[in-house]
Amino acid sequence: MAEALRKLKSVNKSADLVELRIDGIIDLDLQKLLRKPRPKVIVTNRRAEEGGKFTGTAEEQLSILTEAATLGAEYIDIEMSWGIKTVNKLIANSRRASVIVSYHNFRETPDDIAVIYKSMRATKTDIIKIAAVAKAIEDNKKIFDICEKAKKHRQPMIALCMGEYGEISRILAGKHGCFLSFGPLNPSEATALGQHTINDLKNIFRIHTLNSHTKVFGLVGNPVSHSKGIVFHNRVFARRSVNAVYVNFLVDNLNSFFSTYREMITGMSITMPFKQEVIPLLDHISEHAYVLGVVNTVVKQKRKLHGYNTDLPAIASLLKRQTSLRNKNVVVLGTGGTSRTMTFAALANGAHTTVVGRTLEKTQSLARQLGCNATTYDGIQDLPCDILMNGTSVGMAGNELDQKLIPKKFLRNGMIVFDAVYNPPITQLLKDAEAAGCGIITGVEFFNRQAQLQSKLFLESLS
Image 1: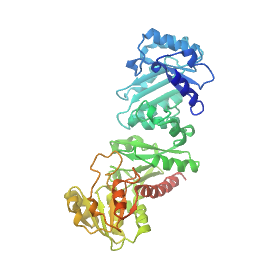
Image 2: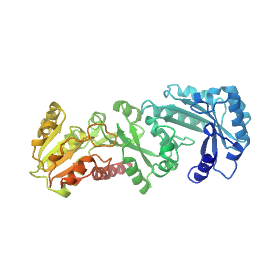
Image 3: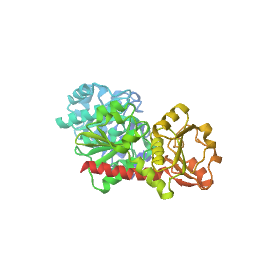
Image 4: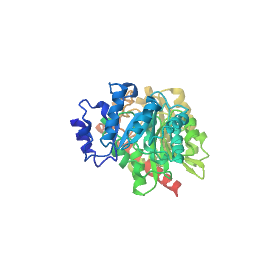
């Protein structure tokens, strides 16, 4: 109780509404808990099979919720699984409180959500809540569709996908007319994967401002949790007073994602592993992106998808700030989209370039396409090098791969080392480079430069 009362007081100005999970309060005193002044509250009391901690009988559970309504709780939450008879009984006994009838599915997002919604609506409840686990990013579309149906019926609705794939449903709830979204006070108090804190929901995503006219942009990749884009692009939208939001799309199947969300999304940042796979799905691509065979930015204009590469000019401009590339010996680590772009930038500016990969066949294939040299990591020690560029994800926070692609002795005083990884801001490679007397270009610098170019394309798509 003491902890609950402290938290209620602390969120009095930051939250519009507070959910009180009273099944988790050991020394519950409802009268004291609901005494005003306090924020408006939802009182929830769930058994273990409902994802809660209440150990009493169903009758005791119902009695506690009825008492909460009598004591002035603004909202009472009851599970649809209790059955229509019990739900209707609580509605009848809760005249002073609005009743939320909830459906939770902790296994999947079922295809028959419309049927579930129809049966819940038959209770004549004040608010319907549907929460289901997303197994893939496409499951969120089922939630968005049922929200739109509820909006047409003027039925107040809370709907979301749980889990890391469901993150976007918590942010885009307002766009689709949902009554509310949930956020913990701080990351350590999150009750499910995919939740953002109240502070992030309000200050990064500006969820209070989202509506049916909000344009949706986002990062398409796997993984995406490390992304700085949600902060960068949403700040630009806020500064320009643009009705748009940028979210993370955790994608497994790119074709399925495009098929599901093409109409909804105005612009995308494309990251690993989709920078090449995205090309056949686009209507037009820029000259640089075509020659490279790598796209990192997509915008929709007149219903057509246009692909661009903002990494290339960003890489070239960052290198030119420190040195001329002409006749320099450049070594590029990796064979993915970023490494390919780094290699192209070096070659286009007159550098002698060698690409280094884990497998000789794949590395030689890339080298033949771009017209440069190739070797594996076993042969890197013998390479002359003025500029070293890392386009792999090795060094990224949480990456379980070997954190060192090259031996320390390869780094020499006067070299320039460019690492595309931006989390952490100074990777182990860059630490070793600085210790050896090298000049460095960080992934943060790279991200910011390409994001500026990307943002320009995003804003132009809205004009």
